[in-house]
Image (tube, rainbow, N blue to C red; front, side, top):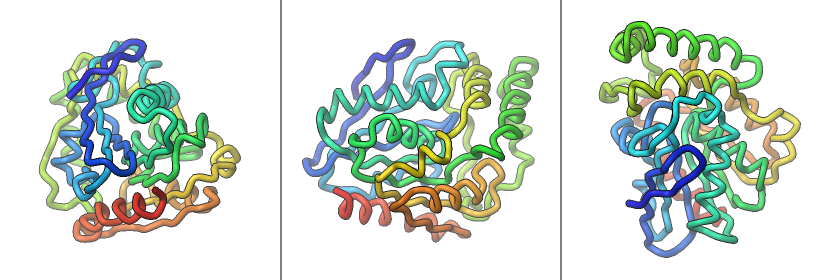
Length: 259
């Protein structure tokens, strides 16, 4: 474990160094590398013979953060990512993998520095473009609810939402974020979006997009749009937990192919 300082935060970082190709793994909003492991989204567990960098985004897990919504915009998270890659893999092209907010962070970083990435494995991309505004309002309501009634009320409200079929049976978890930071995280997420479609269409980085069905927070429309925009992309859609369990193997294949 190590700490890496970025403006406004200390990031908690771990590097599993088995030699081989560099890979960086991210996580989703309100999650962490520990929580993603519980949720079966730790695809790096299927890798061997790589240099795998995992970290908790600012404000999440074991990383610190400020009560500043702007700190949690995807563009800022992409700056953190690029700084980490320069520190741990200077001058190298890496393979990036991550769900939701992690996928968005990777896309923003790839737009800023496409030569830094040799491949991407993007899991359950979040709402974007035409679906982002409504989700932003959801996040603002969540921030206000937490400020009025606390994180327990937010978790209780989420317990009434049916899970996507591909996640049925997953353990119940709570946000891996300090309660006083949650409103800032949600407001920052509400004020951000993926890069413009035409910018993404100009990326030459090979990508695999892993999506699942019936999840309004991670609509299939975003995954399908990315698959059509990115010049070198393939899309795979899961409907069951068994299909999600194949995803670590897909990442292994991606790293072997693109590395």
